[in-house]
Length: 405
Image: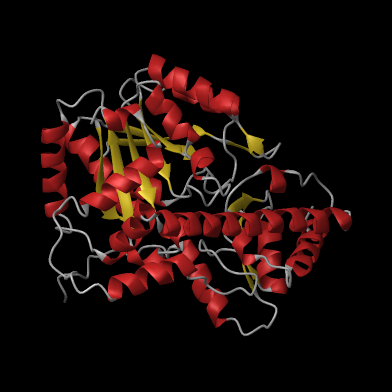
């Protein structure tokens, strides 16, 4: 008998199981539409040239060492990341009531923020969108929130934002609930609120005394414009909200396995900052002690060097542009085949992902008969589509829709 015979089984994490099945498939026409990472038109991972330059400079800098960072991480990186999110000359930064904490990518920033809100600020209830990135529910549950609830987001019948349902659910949320908001390129639907809808969301959050916690995983990667992709966060801050925002540099820098992220904290005034930093320090110390330095050095070097910074902005514009081009081509090819249904949502959405609206039978048909791998909710990664396979994917979707209307 083992002391661990009592350990229960757990379901496989779908997206990783899907990736494993794709890799093991020997069919030459196989397509991976599940991967949440950028791929080139040749279906290859892309190390950004500006990242290569920064790494080369870091490797040849004899003044650097491998000593521990503090619990709060690389201060220069955190300052630059916070400035990138909130914008130049932001009043919260000028007033010194905004600060950043280096974390283990966006997931780590979400978890540190969730722990802080639960343990030190007394929040008990959190709302995430329905649907949302699956890890949101998991990490808030593990952070000890007593209630993890959802607000409506996806209108399946019309393949658009269920704005009325969203507002109604926020109005019914109890006071002091945390509301997780996707800053841009909503995962998995690819649907973002309009400027007017963001204003209405902010009005309800203010009126009902809710707390906004943004997840910003795709700044610059969504539209190619850093400022446009941060508009939602900046609007809330400009209105005087206290917020947390988890930032990831996995997508927009291509630093997936470096686990580089930032938790931006914006408060009403400077009074709670010392105590807040002290408590976050203890949370991190009791978890992973301190973050790694390589990713933070790359990001800080690029953001702090005008030439490298401009090169990087061109890189994210290129990535966003390729994905948007694939959206257009996929929609055109589907419509050219006369596929039943409305497909404008593919180009109305933004970012890496598209919620296709395909049902489970159609999805299984794609996997079984076309070796096209995608999750059961019908979310596809546009990064997996390229000029060599877009017609094949469109024909497969057309066949699936015809087979299982």
